[in-house]
Amino acid sequence: MKRILIVDDDPEICRLVEFALQQAGFAVLIAEDGQKGLAMAREHQPDVAILDVMMPSMHGYELCRRLRADPRTAEAGIIILTARSQPIDEQAAMKAGADLFVAKPVVLSELVERVQALLHKVEQKAATAPLPRPKPKPAAKTEPIAKNGGRLVACLGPVPGTGVTTLAINLALAFAAWQRNAIPLVDVGGAPGSVLESLGIVSEGQQRGLSISDGELSWETLAPQLVAYRAGLHILPSPTTESVPPAVTHEAVSLLCKRFPLVIADAGHSLNARSTPVLLSADLILLVTNPEAHVMQALPGTLAALQEEGYPARQILSIVNNLEPKTRASIEELRSEITRPILSVIPYEPAIKYTQHTQRPLLAMNPRSPASQAIGQLTMQLARGLRLEKAAG
Amino acid sequence: MARQRASGLLAFDFFIRGYRISGHVSTHTRSVVDMLDDALHSYLELQDVYISRISQPADIIATYAHAELRKETLLFAIVPVRESLSKAARSVSYFGRERVPVWLTLPMFEIEGEVQAMGLSFDLETFLAERSGQYVVITNGVARPTSAPDTSFSGEALLVNQRCIDLFCTGKPSS
Image 1 (tube, rainbow over the protein chains, first blue to last red):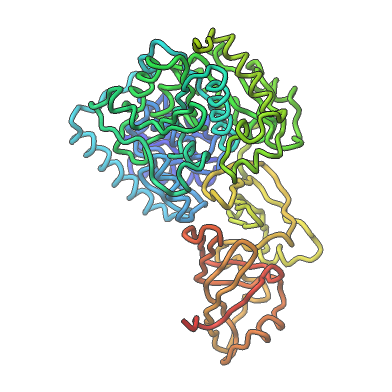
Image 2: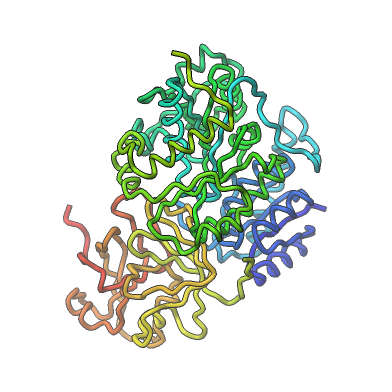
């Protein structure tokens, strides 16, 4: 019997959809929020998951991304069923990896038909795939990329808007200045081009990204893909199309680690097929947070996801990046929520908003500001911890 | 932190300056427009609130179980048609309803759609002056952020806060 997982916090919707699906001969599982849905999906590996978007603990898009990133659930059909039903929401659902987008309110018989059609499509896809669909192993974990040589530091945020890209850029610049050496900054975050856009190298909507086919990666093909920025920063952009498989990015990171003493990765705010192996192979993950309520809400989920992937907790350090002059919660409240040591507190910097318009990093624009100084101190702390040395001469 | 939503709530999309607020509102026996027009309450109670910036309207930046919206800051709301009608307006009219194309601007948004007017000849001044509520119902409406006109928001009915309308054009555009 085919298994369908419904993840929705509205008990009425759950009951109605469950009844309609059971009548059509499906086995139905129900979870009332995103975290429970993720756990249930990993345990039972449903054939189709129907996800609401507006749910406590983890919203539907994030759940969808995590299901797609996990080999145990990556092949499931995913339907986003939501009252946020604008065209832009459909685009977001598809970008997160959903197969279908259905707006609420929905006619139950139509939903059942769409589930049946999606199941058919999933089965066909599995049948025509060049390799037989692998049976998911319950204990399977995403493998870290093969890496030796240089150190890899990844920046990750629990939600969008914690300043992950800003920190990654400024940290890479600080290291480049301190080491007097080139530092690669790898963009493996969710939104293509975020690093290039932040630095004004491309404007919003412009296409410029990693474009190497699988199997032709070498230092000779990789080097021209690096985008040079001032003061020794070399950016490996994220691909702008799906035609570049995540494995290419992983191989590129591996190559960069062989050639450079330090590589910084901007992993954005989600664990996906491109970012997760990079995060798992990082020597350190800098979890970029702040005491805003929605960030604190999302923190336990992010830490749990890293833990589930087998990443050692001791290698996760948190950075408090104050993006607002005042926050309702205190650093102490954040400390109790995060459970990981706070390595650095970057003070609020009014110019940071200005830097978004000028597209000049804070360190280049105002190197003496308290925030720049904090990033400088963080750089020294990391250099000591990672036993990095200045380039000779 | 876990919370489970009670059933019987209306899903909504509200737009204020710079933000899209999605979530639920408990209307009980009233319609949303009745609650918005209720002059005794300056705030509207919202539940399960999901906040996005207008610059990235699909990205949820924060969620809260409860929130209060200051009604006068609301630019427009997207609601089902039945929620756009006040109880008083749910009456049968013997006059014909004229559908008039409109195009209007609000801070950060432009809206295109239709208003339904009673009678045979439409006069904008009379239409605006004789309305009892604060919200203009736009049907077949599409709202676009002025900073990203390729992004659109539409629904059965758009309830537009009349006090926030800067420019109200009617009829078909001349060019």
